[in-house]
Length: 446
Image (cartoon, rainbow, N blue to C red; front, side, top):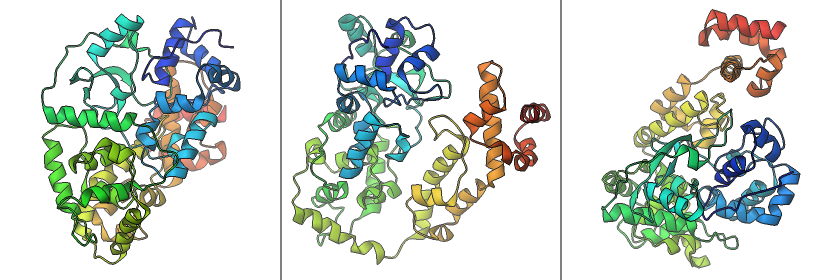
């Protein structure tokens, strides 16, 4: 039973709210707080969303703040769901508020770039928060991908020591305790300021749950007023657009500039990444309202949809596609392989099905893309080899916690069944030392 819940602050992440609950409630440990808020000990809540709250907490929470509004106003939902199709958007909102699910099943959550790996803060917002509320807190808008500055104070955002991605050993890190006094670095580049304000406006704009206007149609309309769309409307000069965007944003120093492959996928409605869409729209000179509250007619939408007939008839420049796709693929499969793509950090098997799905490739296209094929083959392995890496990862995780553990603990977090262990043994030595293998084997036979 939650006796007291602090007031949630403007633009505060739910994670930040729960961190302050941890402090104000007098809980003795992170584990105790997890048990009070969530359904199971094994729940590993995301710092960007809410997590699998227990029914009692949900009942109390609804009296304070409707869960749908909590998702919309205090999680990173607007960043990940802003541009996905309408029905997918509705399902994502419902499941994040009322169901237990992995956010990766609702929309793409790409690996983080340098500069985005830790929760960020504005030194001047910290001073304002302490003056107004008596404590600092984690702001949502400071965590937007490719957001480098605070739009209120026009200064650089600073990285804290708190990882933005949830870890196996979940901890509540209140901003007040984890933010140090940092030097304030002001930004005077008007274009950098305008771009940050644009991200802010798009992120905070009301989300339309009534109209299903494809983002590709909105961007097509924006391109129609530029040199990047042929007068007939049948051809997009995507390579020219990507080259010009690359030069434009490279000078601004943002964390990740959209590649030609990502731009192509967005323009064909196969990718809905917030950062890529905003980069395209801002570069084309489209207003934030034009992007978030489009007034396109059915005829305008159909015009863009009809233009896609070229998709299956135009010849593919395989060499260019291979070169542009390779670094994106390398980043994706490495993150899957080593676990950084997973909220709990567990390594996974890189399968051909996963590569084709995540990269939106059609059947056998890898055969025409030697660089990408070589990257995929580098990470290809059998199921037993993947199981071996998972077991070793789980063993090291449990060992780091410094508490006694047994095979069932390894089984629980690795997902590897005991009946498969004999197939795993030959691969254990490939990824760890003899002593560790002996320890793992001893746990299995004990």
